[in-house]
Amino acid sequence: MRTMSIKRSKASSHGSRRRDEDETSFGGPKAAAEPEKSWPELVQDRPEDTFVPYALTGRFQKGAALAHATFGRGVVVSVDGRRIDVVFEGGKKTLSHAG
Image 1: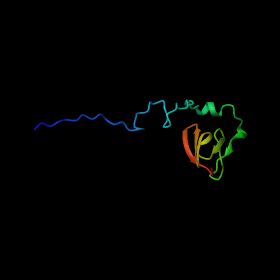
Image 2: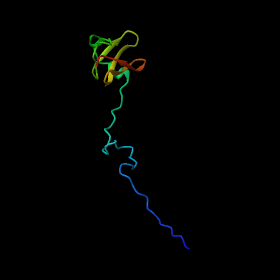
Image 3: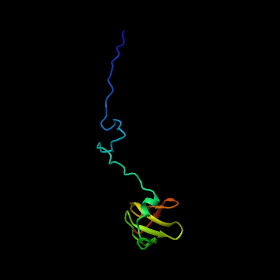
Image 4: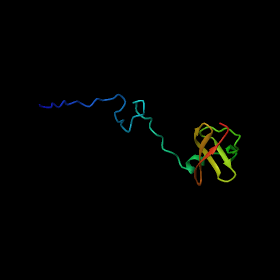
């Protein structure tokens, strides 16, 4: 008796293709990332009175200038719910706010 081999082609499943690095999960192109500015670039033209004192109860938007008791003057570069990323002279810090 002879056995027969049946060749099967691989079934492709939808959504399993690899995405190119420049595509999002929705298949469209990613938005071009804006290069992050350094601390001197962010604070150089801001008057001293525009830096508001940082407080957990405060609400901050992207671009807001704040004065932190420990880290000094900084500028909010991103907001995600109750978290803000702030660039200070000593580097970027993630802080909480009332969001």
